[in-house]
Image (tube, rainbow, N blue to C red; front, side, top):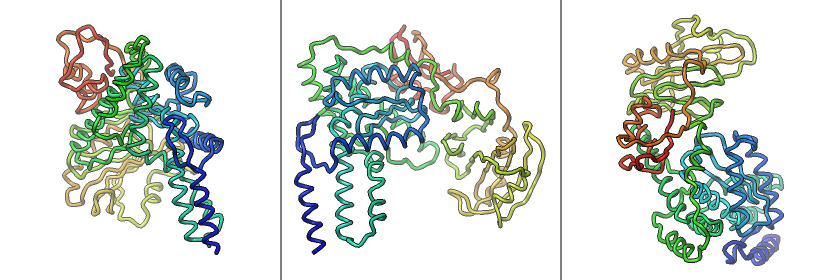
Length: 484
């Protein structure tokens, strides 16, 4: 009897939850009121703002994004909402939206915008997710599934049942909204671009840039010898066909009467001087060097090593080989020697202390450890621990045990390069700068001039930064973005 009563309530809820979508004017199934939607967005934004590094709201780039974002929001289908635009200070090629009008653009994506119209297209796309309530629809689908699960298990304790629903919104945003919703947001973006006076073709332009960047990322991944992962960034789930978008653009152009805006130079000026990759707080890869201005450290890798910086660690791999490197920092809770920390970090392992001493003003301990390691089940690890004040730097390099002797020289070279870093005289992290293209220029020539600052595929990356393939070129005299 309890089962049927709950089922009837759920069926009633399903029937009354089909509402008119404010953007598409179609009937949608949602289990969330607008007030609840705004509350969910506010709660999610509070959590995200604590976990992501955001540029200050007074930063010129943030103000620029906000100005264009507010312009787009004002002509969108839910202009009564307060929209908030943030810039995430990292090199991720992504943008996302939370319910209620919280829009986030990563600096890495902004760096690759080549007109104000393209930025407006991305902002319009994310605003489209808000106006069409895509996250709410995803949330409702997940919630309906969980309600069904709870009906089938009517004896689930209340706290456990509540916990089942706690992460639904995060799941909806992280997993994306599906191809149909993404395409719907593109069509809304075209509509909003037209209303705001921008060139609606910018939607196609940014999609081409994103595909180019995804292909370049896959090329780098394969070149390193790693497995290509499914792409989850901005616009990831778009269908290959552009038919519906082109139809939407054709329709938009037939109604567009205002001057078509592009503002190429304004967009380039907006990102001039900003980091190309990670910020000084996160460190940066410069060719074969890694610099971390905030930690005051640097090190250099031999040729053929592929370097990847992440928030958790600095990682590297010898191209196409199962030979790896990792550097992490550790905050110390008490005073101890590098050897004590090393032994405490690898208890009950076969650890052979090779040397202790001083390097770059830090005490260190060097050891060889025999144990299983990531990607290598029977590994030998070359381990260094450096201590500077309350911080320890843990450097690990490893390969298969039987091949370890072949890479000892490379491991030693990397460890010996570990040193202090001062921006004065030792160079800054890579930053965007503007350059006027000359008649005899090429992307490869710029890459050589800049000492392949972006690594093995610098030429391709510089072309992509300017919305082009490496075999395309700007006109002589055009202002482009480069990296110094």
